[in-house]
Image (tube, rainbow, N blue to C red; front, side):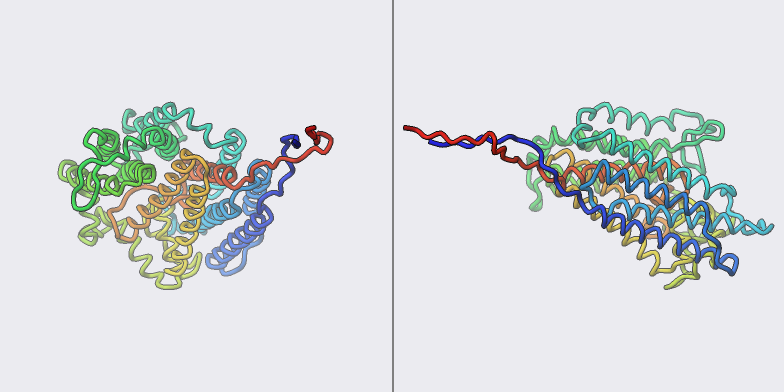
Length: 470
């Protein structure tokens, strides 16, 4: 008889594709620098010098790469460069819009856009990267978040409800009651509520998915859930309607309910949940439109935009955006050569229209492909994740990113009713940008955990013994 004893020790494993990440990061920064140069050339007729803001941005993003190399060495190498590219292009467009008002021509100024907007956006980019690194440092394993399922759920609901509890002077901006405003400081808590609620939904559905997956009656070839299991989806539906009614925010309502329904589908693999969710949301939206004027107004603008397209009409903003994109045509006017400042709030809700005018259809299709690739890498991380909680969490976050882009781009282009949400990474606004970087941090952490090879045992020759039986 013989046996071999071995010591279970971790052997050094090769790091992930961090060299590829660095190369793609350099490419993303080069594209941003080229866009900045093109915007300066279009605005002034001559190439600008190398700006200090770009050097600061490049240094911050290089620091982010070093943090990923240190704390998540096996993560997907494209997640960070894609986020940097989108963030950088957003900074370029905001810089371009700020420069429109220079030269003593107030007619070119964008309403609500201070001269320091580009610098502020750069500062928020740095805060967002710090938040992303904090996620990587504090969350060593994604499953740790599952312990705080109900705590984060309560926090998410509180963040959603806070603006509705405050007086209009501290919560309303452009008709939407979704802000917390005190003095010169403002924050949109719904951006962070989505992240907290994603953790709650993932933890809750992992615990309850067996019961929710049980089939009830069968109608038209579709297995419907049991009536007793409709409680969670009805509660989420009611919460989304309350957001729509009291905060006049169709976008947050759609993102909140859409994320829950899709995560429910991922957990149970029941198509019936998708059908029930879509039916409930469409029916609820129609009923609230009949009951509340501000909701009906959104549908009226969508169906008949040119009826109120004069400067004082309710459809002036979306019509200006459509005309700007039409003016851009296939290849656009070129960065700095268009007139996006004619569209109100072009720096936030309608920044996609500014890109459409100056980059054309080809440019915005490239932007959508970058967003699509970012979502695809997130879904790939979800598929590779080894535990159900991480799969649900990253699947839900990737979907809500895709849904957010669809909702705002669909609204700007007239495909669906317009909402007041931001375009991730591109729009001006600190809350959206910081929340987007936190989302990237979660994706990187789950991707690293999923791709990390398991430690391999090594044999210690000194402990190898051969025992021979007589």
